[in-house]
Length: 339
Image (cartoon, rainbow, N blue to C red):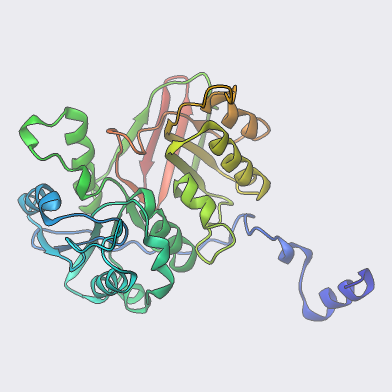
């Protein structure tokens, strides 16, 4: 299309040049955030495995603890099912998840574990009944697929948190940080106010932001780029974490965020835990995670915090994706409060 024809197209269709923002990361018009009903004693939590394989024995500690909180627990058909590394075939995992989406008696869906597999079923799912009666979807890591899809397509809040495979087998022997992070799931599910804090860091950028919180596993976010589950980051607070990646891979993924415009119009950026694979001898990358991220965000004025308690680590607190939060970063560290 030459320039003359292009301008004619713009004028005749009423399109504006801003329409052609390829990446969709300019601040979006304000949408009403759909917050699922908070749970009360007697409500039912369904457990399903849309990704990796897990046994009934492995989820038992989580079942017992959630029942002690006063909730009923319904175990899905995928628990104990196996198709190599997956929790059953794609058909089985999709059917189990769909059943829980459609079941009006289930008020929250706890994903049993991460691993891999959610992206294989996301486009098979029908969210029409879910949208009419939203419920909490809970998990992290591979479950970032659901968090991103709900935010982009449905504007429904969800919970980024530990899953069944992270519940301690013996609560009396659990470390305090394990107990605190598991209890944060109950607090968020029950609608209690929560505030999380991070330690000071010389790499932090000070400031305050009030905006919708989105994010999750960095490699999953990159995988979803240009799909209908791809998140819009403009005007939002983005949090990212990852595990088992080489430094050069993390560098590449942050370049993807930067080049695709996902860092340009943020209100704030939260860097969670990053467990890094050791460099191969002779192929050392030469930068730390802090350094490679800092060089990508040097030009931006919004607040940034590092070492926030979210990710593949013991201090992985429950975050309400898609909901409004206030992020504050100053000399004392960082804090995040849902509003």
